[in-house]
Length: 102
Image 1 (cartoon, one colour):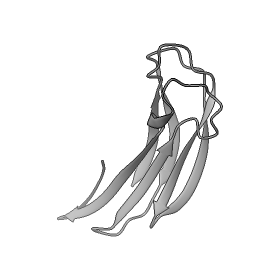
Image 2 (cartoon, helix red, strand yellow; image 1 turned 90 degrees about the vertical axis):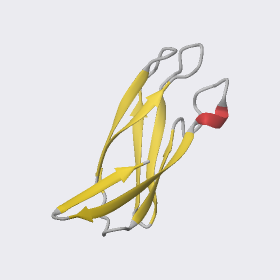
Image 3 (cartoon, helix red, strand yellow; image 1 turned 45 degrees about the vertical axis):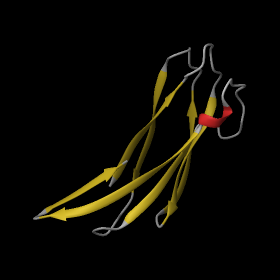
Image 4 (cartoon, helix red, strand yellow; image 1 turned 180 degrees about the horizontal axis):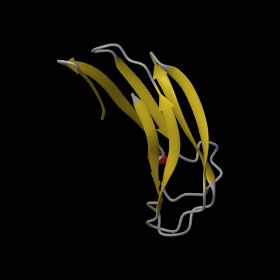
């Protein structure tokens, strides 16, 4: 499964300074990547290039976390909306191996 990018969005009312995004596999696939995010105007977003390949066997589930402003560099109106955990699942259907993340 390819994790190509992670979207970072400024949900605040003002400009957000540059920051770091951490994307990590937290089980059973372990990896960690720190990706610089440029300044974002209010409402802007940035597609952070992750470009990680993780290998999953059929019906194996992986947890992937993404944490924006992981070192709390940016002063924010809401510090509670910076992290998400995604579930990745691969299934074989005939000769196809389909992977999804939710």
